[in-house]
Image 1 (tube, rainbow, N blue to C red):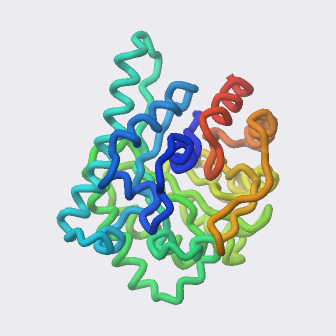
Image 2 (cartoon, rainbow, N blue to C red):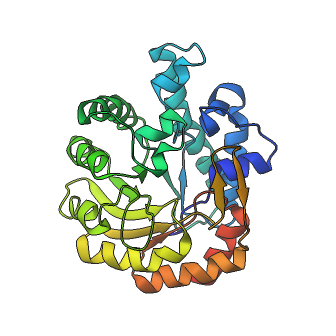
Length: 295
């Protein structure tokens, strides 16, 4: 299955200003139509699963805009409605499709809400109870929003994974969980990838285990380790472009071409990945190249 790429990357390419604590989710308040346009850009190049603009969305985040918890929940529900709308319009414009693209509710880690880069370290300085409370209310909301799958993304630590093992078992919607990794063997908090992946090896609602927002050169080894640790689950790989993000000034350095990404995707699949796509700095042109390579 081919996933989409970085929704924020495409929104910025469309001229949207998302340089704030809510990131792409801020457009749920200011420019929801841009989200539909960006989603269709990925569908048009062959993405078979597209994610909602909710990775950084939370009651806490929307409270910074003065929204009540009820209003925040409405915005988060809107993220699914917009992605479903984009999917439905795409289907109408392309009669005869053999496969209806899926809608994944994108749910980032606790650190994404903090907007301080801590999702790339997992060092939040909070208890498991705090993580449980944060994820429980949001999962309960998205579990009934009509998404085809819940996508728990960029999970950086064993502690957060342990919390999600319990909470995802209570969900009625199928889910995937994807970890951010610092090398070919460890998630960013230093835990071996086999340890966190193994927690979901027999999970009742998690159907896939993967890695994202990770340098693409680490993906083949990570995928092989995922397959060993959770052989009954589909292995996923949707790394970032391999460029370097600088937290101090929100800038990137380096470059990776779409063809480079497509060549890399073949290695992920050869290692056993069955669901592939892109993350940060991977736009529609990268997904088109990956799809052309694999199809």
